[in-house]
Length: 204
Image (cartoon, rainbow, N blue to C red; front, side, top):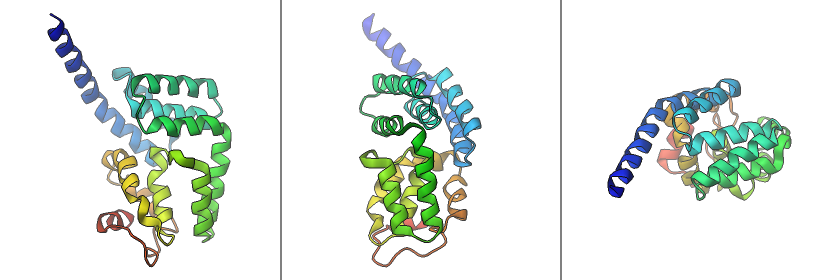
């Protein structure tokens, strides 16, 4: 009987994840377009069918933290740790909770530096913002595009591919939506950059 129960539990979890997949794509669609209101609603729909979905817990925790709703953010963080304690988004969400509403102004400052052509300073400001945890999934491509515009910045391409893969799969346009308005995406990769051909293709 016990093996049968285990099989049923595994099957149930698999079905929940399958049901959550199109909902997650919808959430990434809105998140890639900076519609946090729509994205937050979409991620909550993901949790309705898959309560332990790590991406949804991390995204909703991040939205709450950046908005100053720290008790709510900590609740999502606790759920994420319980569901998947080794998930890379755990450290990312911990960083967002630590910064709270300071996250937004720091992100604006980093983007402003990049927009002004101060790419190295912008990359440093991003690094200060994200810390050792690295960027949240919705900002991973933006961050590593910035690094790719700085000499030697291609070393982070593997992390970028992993961290932003869900967003790119969710919407083919998502990987270019930020890039079209980015001063980094419109300039050639810095001389000596170690970007792979695949990563260069993403940046175009």
